[in-house]
Image (cartoon, rainbow, N blue to C red):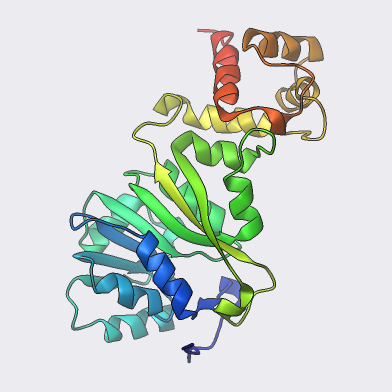
Length: 274
């Protein structure tokens, strides 16, 4: 049975509430947190998924930017001491502060139906923040989810940035009719398992992200040209870097694997002045 939220939607927040019971059950099952985990739910909205998490979590922190929704949720879960609702903008609050404010601790995990307009920013916020979660199970626009989870041949800048810290995969797709109001796009639930350590040293992660972005400066061109444009270096110098990393200079950025992007970055770093 579906349930229509009574709260008036705020379009500026990209609110589409998931109401399909079957999908809620599947997300709940995918969020296989342990007894020791603090669960941070992003955008609990009308609380349908929150109810399921609260029934088995020892500590659940719901982070809701909409004040009216947050107040309603606080009243609704007032008798459940394991649940804390924070009226916060998750992008303006570091993960450690969320845990402190909500009375949680590490290890922790993240779940929720993310607003389409800031979904990737929220994921990046947790992957690049401190401490990092064990995993995230989140709903995104399907096109974005697929871009995040691509492999060599269809690699994307978003896939590289996410893959630096984690191993993401699409679990299943969600039709628009599962939401109220229905969005104009299809959605997907993604599982993002966070690595114990990123693929490059911590102090070089931001440089790697900027390097990958530069490498996709002209994604339709061959990698030697795209890299030269992004790094603002001569094509010959870009070819030398690719050769040092044993990468074909004639393929396009999307055809390069994540491991080879790391090798290419290391070749660039080796030429960096001490």
